[in-house]
Amino acid sequence: MTLNEVEGHWHQLVGAAKKRWARLTDDDVAECEGNRNVLISKLQQLYEVSTQDAEREIEEMESRIKQVSEGGRRHYGGDE
Image 1 (cartoon, rainbow, N blue to C red):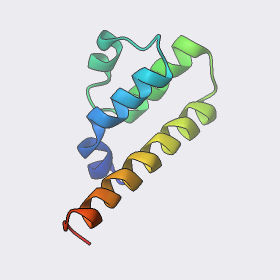
Image 2: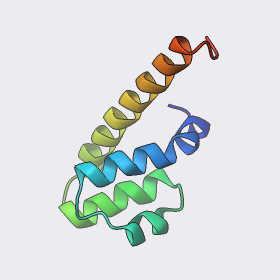
Image 3: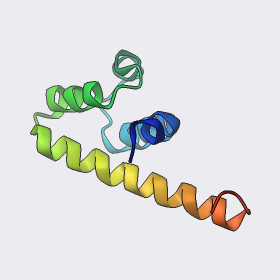
């Protein structure tokens, strides 16, 4: 996912991340200010996971969000 796509789906990503990682607070999200790397750092601090594990899980979320988004555009006649 490109940086622009991540920024465009930031709220979806954060929502999914907050469901997955319950210790992630609204204040933590606000500190991230749309920055994926800060989110990764927060996950490392809160859950003591490696950078690679945090990146992998976020990439998986981004992929699912992108698939859902693209499916909706195809289904509703958006960009193809």
